[in-house]
Amino acid sequence: MKSMKTLAVALISGALLTSCGGEEQKESDSAEKTNAVVESCTYSYVSDSTTLKWTAYKFTKRAGVGGTFNHIAVNNAKSSDNPLEVLIGADFSIDATSVNSGNEERDPKLVEFFFKKLANTETIKGKIISINNGEAVVTIIMNDKSVDVNGKISVEGNKVTLTTSVDMTDFEGLGAIASLNEVCSAKHMDEDGQSKLWPDVDIVVSTVLKKECN
Image (cartoon, rainbow, N blue to C red):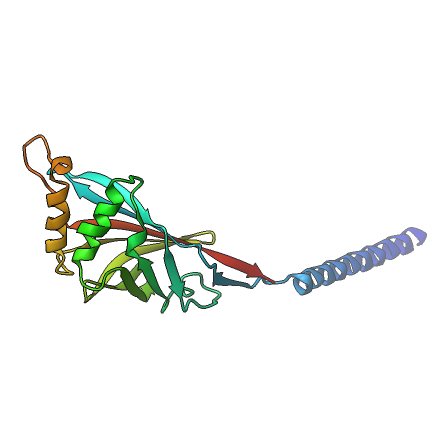
């Protein structure tokens, strides 16, 4: 009889212990969910964080010549939880006379015989019209022509990079291309005896955003 009572007490105690253990686990899970905080971040533009690298091409076999501009201004960027949306609607201006190819002899020629051959282009202006699925549409104003240019845009951490290509044919700028090629004819002469400066220029623009999280 005593053994039956002992067995009953053991079963009841085990059931109570199991029940209490389950309740503790549920309370612990609930506490973890309560304490979990979803991080919310906001991105904003950092002044003077934009860099632009251009690559022009000379010779009939297309050898690249690279450079940048020392003065680029970006305005009307906004804050957003999406880093790409920070730049939608932002406008920019580039001081063409600040062109920097890393060659002190070449830079004055680029200003005098290329940019000054264009209408009202001491400053190149533009605006980011849209960004969607890794594609960006940018309006560029140069030589009194406004042209929408398509590009690829990506985000890595808090860095946004846009890659695109500009064809001076679209801006009626072949006269400026010819002017620069004429003054630099000897330096653009290829092994085939032809002097060539191509009208297309590849561009990579990078911007670093400020990221703030709660």
